[in-house]
Amino acid sequence: DAGVIQSPRHEVTEMGQEVTLRCKPISGHNSLFWYRQTMMRGLELLIYFNNNVPIDDSGMPEDRFSAKMPNASFSTLKIQPSEPRDSAVYFCASSLYREAGNTIYFGEGSWLTVV
Amino acid sequence: EDQVTQSPEALRLQEGESSSLNCSYTVSGLRGLFWYRQDPGKGPEFLFTLYSAGEEKEKERLKATLTKKESFLHITAPKPEDSATYLCAVNLRDNYGQNFVFGPGTRLSVLP
Image 1 (tube, rainbow over the protein chains, first blue to last red):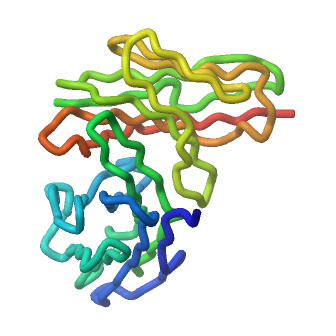
Image 2 (image 1 turned 120 degrees about the vertical axis):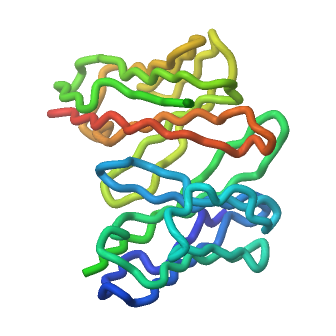
């Protein structure tokens, strides 16, 4: 089974430009997560969805960040306008939520550099 | 505040030199503790889940254990290919069961 698929793998953009990151979760999973990883702050949860519905977006740093999940197989994370401090690795992850417990599986990440 | 710490921050071992990594947590309620391995330029790769104190899981040269306040990842006779960053995460009890808090990781280098 294919894992979590993210695109683009690498993006270099200029400050002020819009950035869109894309994610395809593992088929059959009902939860999707967006994480950001930096050297200073490690892995931080930005937002997660259950059954395509945003549940907790308290980790989204500012209004410049938005995320959507229009269907069970696709999600986007958008940054508009982008700033140099947004440079980081953005991971998408998915899981099949069960009452007894669940494991999240990560994609390979999107490496974003804002210059 | 829910918190996860890991020690040491970095560890250098000679091939075959066994050691342990520590993950300590202070959380209001634990649904599970997870260990991941992350190679440079890659996403975290799932290794183990532990749900209750006293539980142990093994995979090749790795063994994870859990107590009420911490978890250990024991590496027996490591090889250079075990070099990676090891992350632990706790799944917190909340209304949705999807709150995962990650530790900062331990960077392991195994020298031949």
